[in-house]
Length: 375
Length: 202
Image (cartoon, rainbow over all chains, first blue to last red; front, side, top):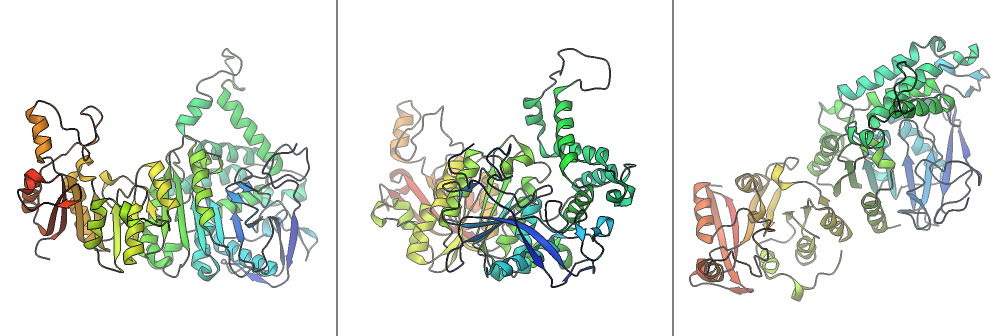
């Protein structure tokens, strides 16, 4: 399968770190590794690097395919490639799998070199702050002093924001997309239900399922089904499925009756087959904990007072999990600091998922902004 | 930023430039493609933001390098701090606003000064068209009655009274027709009114 403007066949790489990393919780990772991919070429002056921060279930495989016959490309492939909005003829794009992940970086399902067994439940809880710290070390490893841009959607947008708090001098442009300065109680509540589904699965074994030869599939499946409901808008679910019946008639039972159920079960099964439950717990916790304004009595403007980057904040009209009003809070804090900021509220029917969709206006915005980024 | 050609700039933009001081902070409401902000930045080294609701205009402003915030002015200016701009500009948009009083109040909350421009409904050509039994259609009011976005048209007299009633001080007023100053019978002879305002007593 050859596609125009694709980055083509890509290969994941792994960076090992032996300098201990003290986490926000106080726990220490004596050593760890990060899986990453890069697209495009780093220029001689190393000024064209763009870091992509992933969301809840993402990873370092952002664009391209590992093999010609891969069914799906990387998760943000529609954005990245030669001639695409994030043009790899201009930029050197880095994607990584965050710490605690399950796609190649150190995490609960990876082997602890000290014990030669999976970290399992002993892998510490990691935060957005920890991720950004480890991402900065990956940049050091790659010899990159400053990012042309950091880009993230949802939980990734929180990391983009945190970069400007922890390492303001290392970022020239920040893209905070479909994100929020912290989660609302309702938003955290969804995460708690998802975690409870996993933790109460009899096959979870307090997170030590690797050593019991089980997988808490049911819990993970329900967690993902719940997530998918919140990533879509009521309108788009209505449009996509409505009350369409799977078999054309009611069966008066509890198997799949409606198309919507079929979709959720498919998504749940697919996810449960490829994602690690302990990672899911940690990713949702990182979402819950992120609250940079907390240290400043709730004043986000104060939290961002050292930021120097130029910002673009984008929200989507039907996104109720990370609603436009939450993005406007970020914009307000940036305005308070008289920082350069552009804010777009993109009309979309796709809810939170919209940030991954190739909506023409959204991609025009990304392209137009990125064309102005000097490298 | 794009080069704004001074000779091609709208006459009211050229006059607004005279009311903005160099190196000050400007907020342009309904900034369109950002021409005015770009012009002010290039001629006066101003900084600031534009506000624009329309997708096409918003993107054009971004392409012109303007820091543009997409929001609806009818909702006010929440997100902008009190007195955080030297000048807040609303050019030829007032007449299309539903919440006219709110936006003017908000402009003077956020800015130390406000510049408001609008087509003068009292202009003789408008009066003539009314007298002959038609809604006015002209260069400054280019719409038919059924497709106009203008919901709150007013005359210079009306706006003067509005300022008195709302404790707004008129620092300067300029009335023009086709780019030329009008000094005699402005409410009759002028087709575009420009006001430089601040809160009375400040």
